[in-house]
Length: 255
Ligand code: NDP
Ligand code: 8X3
Image (cartoon, rainbow, N blue to C red; front, side, top):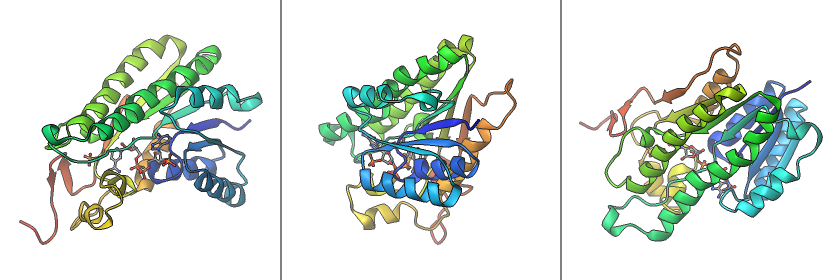
């Protein structure tokens, strides 16, 4: 019988690449996100390319009633979720704290922290009932180190770091693996979202070096799921080779 994976934020970036990687490897995929048309495109692609069984669920992780309705609608094999990837998230803005945009803060906190918690609260009991499962939280280097103007985004990812540790402690007796994957700079829609559609500014983030790509993160996400039952990766930091830490990136043509 095929295993079931649920991925939040599967319409773009890491989440989309993770869905492709797991469908290619025979998983039944629950793909989720707000942009319905992109979910439908991905559903078609996974069905046609890999003959995968796919369930698209269109909801906003910030809205508890939508999350409850989506998870409550699952029936049959789709309730037997083997892997939950809490990936949906964003950065909004890059301002010093005294110039911060409160609405940006609310979006980041509501999505990156509360959305992840809602998903975990609703899916983990299904795993605990079966005494098996794997929860993978997508954190960030921004949850390990704080950088200038990163204030609230770094705060949300530091929260993911702490919540992942707490989740692992609480679920270990239920035989549930809990892993954090913390990437460095990756070229997805992330910077376009952070800079609110400013393509030029977003493009400059990756000037002069080779960043991570979504497939790189999908590869390591798959890797942490194929280890023996008795082995868990607690925390995996994945960086571009040109990036040493949150603030040190070697860019060609720049001193
Ligand atoms: P993208 O912007 O490419 O993708 C983000 C995904 O999250 C989209 O599918 C989006 O779907 C979904 N999403 C955002 N808000 C919501 C919401 N309220 N409800 C449901 N889905 C939502 O970014 P990445 O792939 O780069 O980011 C994925 C994760 O990785 C995030 O948590 C990010 O913080 C983290 N990360 C990114 C890094 C990077 O440099 N790119 C590095 C380290 C971590 P839709 O808009 O359709 O809802
Ligand atoms: C995304 C990576 O360091 O640009 O989480 O914020 S960073």
